[in-house]
Amino acid sequence: MRKRVPGILWILCALFIGHARAVQNGYNHNVVVSSGAPTSRVELVRNENEVSFVRLETVRMGKKPGLAVIFEGTGDLHYYANGKTAPAPNLELQVEAKSPQLSFQKAIFPKWTVFRDSVDQYIDVYVGNFIVFVPLDPATLLTGANPAGASVEVKISGVACTSLLCLPPFEKTLSVSVDLAAMNSWRQIVSEPAAQTSAPAQGPSYQTWFALLLALLAGLSLNIMPCVWPVLPLVVMRIIENAKQGKSRSFTTGLAFCLGILFFFIALAGANIILRIFYGTVLQWGDQFRSPNFVAAMALLLVVLALFMFGVFTVTVPSSVAGKSGSGKGYTGAVGMGFLAAVLSTPCSFGILAAVFAWAQAQQPPLAALTIVVIGIGMAVPYAILTALPQLLAKLPRAGRWMELFKQTIGFVLLVTAVKLITALPESRRAGVLYFAVVLAFCVWMWSGWVGFNTKPIRKWVTRIVAAALAITVGFLFLSAPASELIDWQPYDADAIDTALGQGRPVLIKFTADWCLTCKTIEKVVYSRKDIAELIKQKSILPIKADTTQRDYPATLALKSLYNEPGVPVSMLLVPGRKEPARWRGILFADRLKQSLTQLPDKG
Image (cartoon, rainbow, N blue to C red; front, top):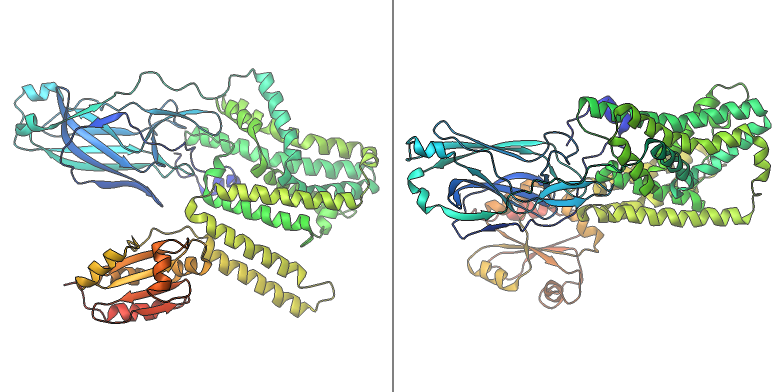
């Protein structure tokens, strides 16, 4: 994983510097461990629901005594296993043991798993559960080292990734006491050592001329990407208007538009050089899509662009874009529109671009930069030809009803693309983005459709301020990254509830459902409060999450037959000795819940 990049570089390359590449899911089953009492474990890394723990244990592998560094992780969390296939040097998992009394040999890693990522590169990884064995140096055993209890420190470092993003580099030191006197009783482990062969070399093996030709074709293909189509009517309008002002004006403003496209790819090339020289990593096409925030933002942008294609709102071409005679601002607007067209091409790009980028990153920085710029040239070529030869405009199809139907068809294509991006988000964030997309569409319609040309200014400003405020408020509620759950909710179990009440333990039941929008809001405004979570622990309350998503779920049946409630959301506090539970419906009940929890006796 690359180091933190200075702020100025993030601003320049925010669309393309995502987290390091990630791989498919799966557990490593190449390690076989014999039975034995587990030692305590510590959390190594965590991201949302993905977590990896590590613990140390004195073991024997065959006749060799040593330390087992035991990793226990979820299936969508992995470590780079091979420095040759990692995106930068020294990112692979490293384990080192040191002790004042003992000496250790080099760590023995298990066999890794080879995955092929989204840009056709092969990456060696450790996934899920595996063991790294650090053998004791035989010389230590022959020197009469103190067997009573030698202190050992094990340093673990590397980068952990999920299928969407890579976490910051970590380094953690664990301590353990090694009793050589008990060495014969240490349990046996069997681990298949890592293979000596590495994954295939990164990057396709193209000739330079062929790779540059592919880069040109890749740039040309960006012009047919659905994500670019919303801006094309404005571009054509601009070309037609400038053609009326003369060939010279048409050519210069068209050139400015092409420069805007090139500036975007020049920025990418510059960022790539900086990353490779100063940070030891590379820029890959598609890296940005490993960032959930970027994916969510692009999906929402496509929804807005679809609304534009449906005619929900229109984009007025400002004077800077229309290029009024004698105005230098027209060139600035052309450059900006070209840059925007290049940006909009990113979510809809396909394999040829990934192949070109993969080849470029296996080359020296100057050639890699040239390849990236050639992609921009390919995208700009059609506009350069069209503005240099304005007579070609006469061959464009005349406007008519077909054009409006075509635009609306593209709107549906954009919505399909947006849905595809949303499905790539972590499960915990998909629902929030979907809900906000609907609210955002409403706010855009409100912004444009509720006012007209003759609307009074005060009414126009009030309407648009309300629309913006609604979008910001709902966005804050549904787009923020979900925090780790503060409450250890247990699944609904009638027997567990009865047992807790019989032991004098209160029970808090949260009736919810996956399709319940209000339930999601309650999670954020009530059960994400630290004071409420602390009270639940302090009072030894059993928290129950009663899922009523399906009609045949036990919680659904109990909600109707046992508690006589018509639907969700509803929360209940069952207290031993009380006939009726306290009930809260709606959203704003956090303070009343806190008051009820405070009145309960503390844990005995």
